[in-house]
Image (cartoon, rainbow, N blue to C red; front, side):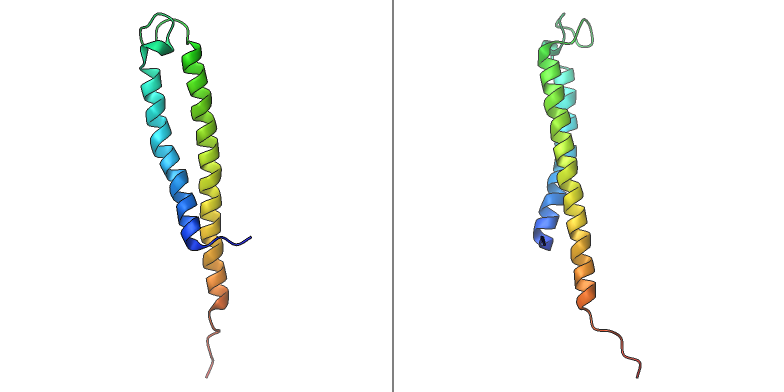
Length: 92
């Protein structure tokens, strides 16, 4: 399968976007009182609210990483394909 440079850039961008957005969301969930049994941040046992969101964040980061890696690999493959099409230097 061949992926165009445009799609490779898009996939790489999605991977980067994932790593920009989800860690910030994780911090917001951590600081939410609903994440802790006492309602105070970092005190008491973590609630299912925290665990569910932690699972969602971990899965999204894993998927985003895979998509980003595919994008980078596709971008590098397009560079190799374009290098193969260049004419050989002539020894005149």
